[in-house]
Image (cartoon, rainbow, N blue to C red; front, side, top):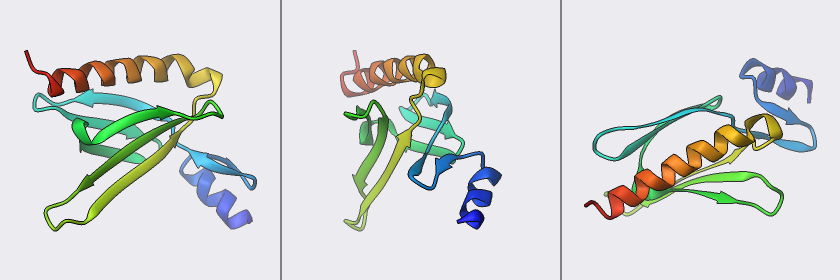
Length: 110
């Protein structure tokens, strides 16, 4: 158990033995062709915005979900539980609002 705690501390992940690690969003940027660049303390991901969504949970956490079928017909998935504690709540809200705006723009270009 101490080895796991040291590993999580190495990557600055919030976790205890009773709780799973949660991602902290550093920033979200968008390319001109509608890709999301999401940087978290767990890594940076570049994904087509159409294949992504944010979802609230009953516990107040936020889930970032990516799901699509690749060229070979295989499912590709990425699920991140986002830390929505009070210190990150406002920033998360702004990121999700911008995300929803950009996704709507890509779905319905005018």
